[in-house]
Image (cartoon, rainbow, N blue to C red; front, side):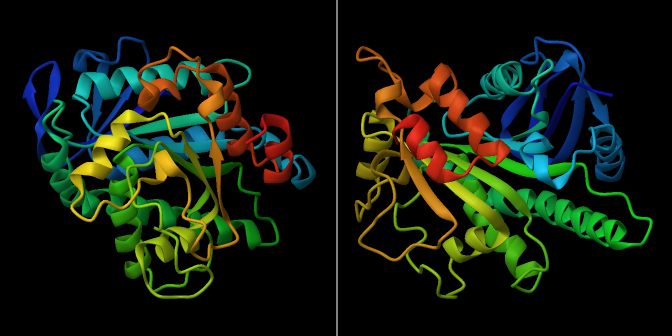
Length: 324
């Protein structure tokens, strides 16, 4: 089975690169490192063929009893953030796979969803537009995933049905969370809220470039974006740091100046759904660390926290273990 997986709505610009313009969804797999070169990737003809490959790979995961659910493997979707060229997104994905999805302690398999971020420091507002435009494409991916999960649930309920071997999870970084926010609203609406099963087991919002009152409706149903995410997900964990200068700039570019979730944590003046919590990661970064926005992927302690979150360790245990 392939080691690396990618879905993209970037249009190709050269034989060895995907570009900054939006195109149709394409599907790719790879087996060797050096993923920033498109020549390392093999195109998959269509979504159905890609889904068949993913399902076959997940079916090879070991079956574990419910009492050991933290050992269950994951099919994880990684959505990168603002100001990433395709090659930068591929390098970040490869780094993530090396840290969490390789070797005997692998969490399972990870799929890169890469969207046409402009990849330059002046591209913040264009990236917001690209993120909104990308949402229907990612929603299509999520809807396909939901339909597959629902089918697996029905199969498992049969007298001779095999238990599901994989959890689904999402890691979203920076403005990738804004892409996900909009996509989940599409998916929730399409599936006639509420849903029969959770689409995502664990969502980790890393340095999220979204409003920190996203979940302000609490347990009420207001059909907001926060409602969509909270209802589609079993547990949501927001990792943040007040030292993130990139998100300080982001807040300043928004005319009404609402604070960023990835810089300030959840707005606790508002009610929150029970399945949403946050963790201040500031102390995990060295005093002289400058690029906090990307440091989550390069810091041992934050990667350990992400691993524990994905495996489903209780948040009370996580708060004690990491002091967050």
